[in-house]
Image (cartoon, rainbow, N blue to C red):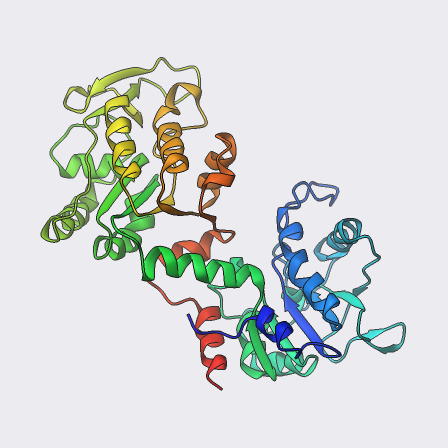
Length: 402
């Protein structure tokens, strides 16, 4: 993917004494008192900021936080808690600047090289979500270099993500965004074969476009959760009272046929783990996929299926993982997801994983260091799997050619 990279601009000596505007993803969870409960995104944003400061730039950083109303700032919308935590991590005080679109001042003067400020919640600005040209031009006028380093927002064309990149003198990808681009290219644009995708979730309808897109490219498409139940129905199996979408059987069949036409496969579970109720203390029963009773709930793939899928993953060249294959939060129904997680960890394949539940499973089984790349953006990652070109990638590629 041809884009200008911030690291290259620094290496070329083009950042010193420049005004650098970084769009980060600092949308962190907070408790009722406003205290930050998890700071991964703040930690992940710091390398780009430190790169800019070390290169001698005057640095502005902004992000959205929560879901504020445009033009109606409230204290709950403030990035002040983020600035405090970031300051603790970086060992410096970080001022927060409000009403910044018409100019950024620090102690009454223009921002100087080596100085760092946090620009208040960008989603409060009128026109942000609609990517208003006038607002984007104001933002672009604040800087010499725009750095997009927020993959979690890469699927949105907003003033602080797309418009500013369109109008800034230079627009480039920060280290986080560049790493996502590289991982996506390696996994989907030029994969080492066989390419195996795991797509799981409660509903086929929410992942239908992803399934169709992957069916044209992958060598094996592993489905899990409620999605697998719908595919089992399509294969003529009974699923009891399990979650499924019978009205989408034709769509599931089309995916199976598309894969089959290419000599690829959608493995249908041969055994499952069932229960009579959906609860952590429900009695688990392993059954052949042909023996599911009318009052059964399928809550996981069975050990035979899990073993067969693990063997396929061990032979893969590239693995894309989105979604646990069972109710892994319940101990009795976690074996399928745990087996797949461990197989991915042990496989020599390049692996890329994304999505909130997937990240929770990765953390639960402690395989973070054994996954090739863990994507930081849920919605953006899903849109990439759908085969869409993300707005952030599109505008940065355009700007690389100007």
